[in-house]
Every structure is written in structure tokens, then in C-alpha cells.
Length: 223
Image (cartoon, rainbow, N blue to C red; front, side, top):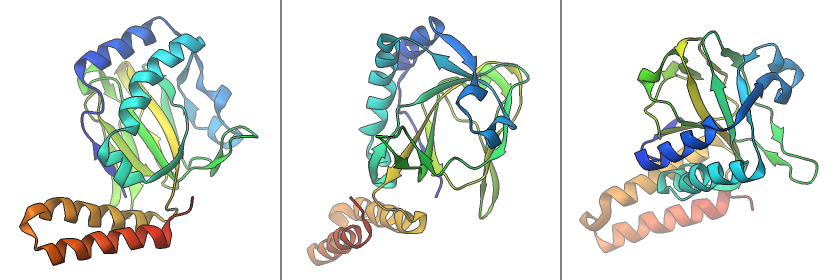
């Protein structure tokens, strides 16, 4: 399931994030990649002080984890701190699948969902589309700044070469309470149905939907 979430960050928050990023250094992204990913990865990743990272995460991560669509689509159990990546002209990331287990020795988590929060506007750079292989074909994604996309970490995905400008993105991974992506999709669709019905449904119909959603979460969730 691929979910696009608009307006994670507003213009004021984006300005604050970019201001911090302009004060930070970036290093070769291969340094954080596994042996297989190193063959495909050509980008830069943020190296910053603890204060700078706190300033960034207090905006980006805070706004992401409180967004209702994120909460109901991902059903998060654990989430990583974001990596802030930069793609300059000629940089790209070839097709790959994210590592199944991430985190340090004392903070392991399973990567069920990958998240990209776009920090550059589409007209700030050329190329640089996020390409995600789905059951319906490859989808190329280039969202407005402040928007995000969630997709299964098991999906093959890539970043097309940037041919001009600068592409900035925050990337995170999470372990969901519901491991199976099809089950997560069913739950999210059921959640959307109960929101859409609202006061239009009868009390009995509404309660049946609420009960079904609650008991499916109980059946499938791992905490």
C-alpha cells in the first residue's frame, strides 16, 4: 500500500527546517549503506550536532507522528529517527530493497514501512523522482515540499538521477503493529469507511464497523 500524505509541514516549518540544513554539513551517503546498497547509492547525508538534529526532528518527526493519516495507515509500533539526505546534480539511488532489520544492538526494529518527507519543491530540481515498484507497475513520485509518502519497505524502489538543482528529503522507517501490508490496507480502508460514513450511517451500522475495526486490530496487531 502506497499512501501519500499532504501538508505534513507548512511553509513556516519548511523554512525553519531548511535554515537548519543550510548550517549543516553533508557526507557521502555510502557511509551508512550496507555492502549491497553501496553499489547503487550516490547521495549525501546530514552530519550535524545534537542540537541541530533536535531542532530538525522537533519539527519533521513531531509533525509526522501526530498526523492522523500516518497513525491509521501505518499503525506504528516503533519509528526510526529520520535521515536527512541531499541529492545534487548527477546523484541517484539505484533500485534496492531496504534492510529488513534496522537499529543499533539495543534498539532493533523490523522495517515494515519506509517514509519519505519531501523538503524541496518539485521546481527546485529536475529529475530525482522516487520510483516505487507496485503490483500495478512502477509509480514515479515527486511531491510538493512538506508532503510525504509511505510505502512497504519490501518494495523495490529507486531515486532517479537529479539532472539539475538540489533534492532534499527526510527518510525514516518504522515497524508496524500489523506486519502484513494487505492487513494494514484492509484496516486503513475500514478506517476510511467509518470516517466517510460518519453521521450518515445508522447507529447499528456504525457500531458494526467500529466493532469490526477494533476486533481486526486485536486479531492482527503485535505489541
